[in-house]
Length: 130
Ligand code: THU
Image (cartoon, rainbow, N blue to C red; front, side, top):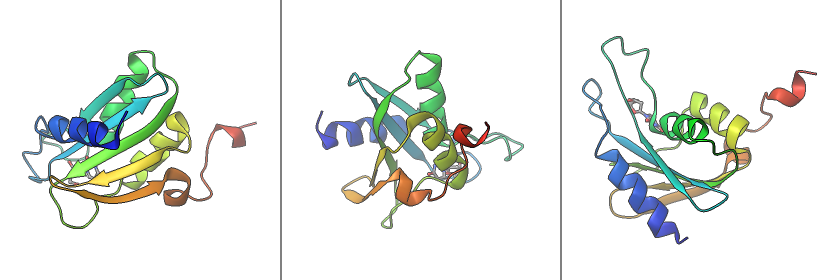
């Protein structure tokens, strides 16, 4: 699958964002190991604190549909500067997705590309719970 396909899916998912409080809409698209794309968008609510980011929505959707292996994730926001995953999302993406390639983009162009292990060095994960 081309990068542009994954980014396009994240842009499309972003349109469904429920960002009534921040106005900051984000879309994410996860590529599974069999080439399936699972998308997510941020969902805010009146308590603010229960907000779910686009990346976690995408990952939880994918897990609940039975996917367990992932290759890449694209994250799209309408910003000139790159919008990287927040700390909570880095943790969840790492635990369930491993060392994903993280592609960042805005509505027009790619804004960055990273390995998740570079965004989350020295992670805490299940290997430590032995
Ligand atoms: N947000 C995401 O969905 N993903 C990110 O990578 C950064 C932040 C959301 C959470 C909240 O709804 C809004 O953006 C502002 O923080």
